[in-house]
Image (cartoon, rainbow, N blue to C red; front, side, top):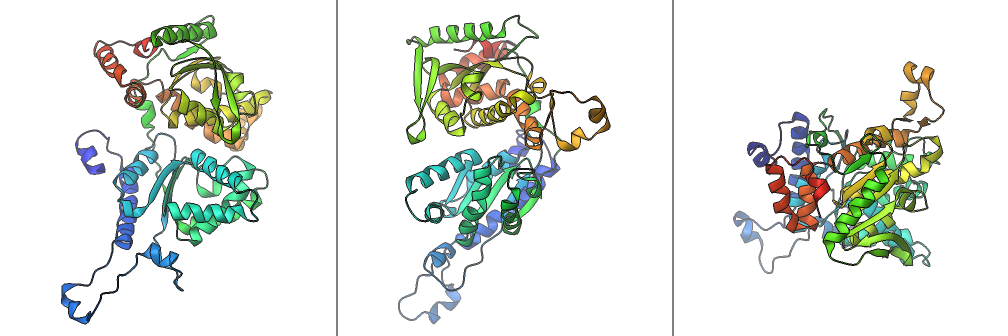
Length: 429
């Protein structure tokens, strides 16, 4: 499939992507060989006098309690910079995987949300985590996790025990990440409890650095009309509020406050909503104890978010910065259209965020600012956020949004694009 897309011109030639797809192909072939039922050959059929004993698959042998654990292929941990094609390549693998792989493809955010939900359901048990590991392995044998990135201390302390039990039950793990295994949860609280997970991860997967220098998201055509800043408008908030009114009018439905049901009985208030469109302030979504579960619930209810008042991130709003990163990840993963008013363009929002190594550079050590945030997790994640915010303003992203959420908009988008309509995104209903 990758070769076909290359020859058709859909993909650009990228040697690092090609080496990655070879690694995925090798894993695919190993899984296919292991999962394929074995039959007696025609040359030896005379050896089978009487009923032929059906051979169980390697996963069935394990579940059947065989004394010797079947050998399973190593998984694959793909890491590298933003926009290098990691997710696209993993999705190709998931798309062509046959049913016998029992493959699950999801994001790290959604997977951990599922784990916490299951733990909550069985919280009265003596060891709910073991039960959850058993449940997960009964449901899938190959787990593809996109954007593996640990920031929460509760997740960090849980992951080793959870995944160890799944690996002990022959999990094949495939993941993408912006960070090498040894850099996961770097400088996090109680990181020593996380280090055994890193060691087991490196033992159970082949670690592959995609190491491409091209950010394909930045190659997408960038169009104005979705990001309202003080560079272009005296009152960006008023501009996005006017955008909401225009979109709401086109919905031909009543607008007003709404509520979104979140897991475990919680509710997220939405000040303004109409049809599949909602408007909230930055403080509504990032200035309160809101998390990925709330953002996922919001994306399941609305396909367009108008977000008001995103600030430049400084020392005083570090936690809000973390929530904003999670919000953008979830919006992007669910292909949500975002209209946003902010104090700056995407790259300007994180101009005060630096990693520890960057802070030690002479140019930063001498000219550091009181508002700077020295934080490796934020520092390494900001590039992904900037890249995604940039792509979310592209015509290509909006086409995909329309296909998924509003197919009736495709023709209008394509016609406007053919006429060179630079403000197409801003005019969409």
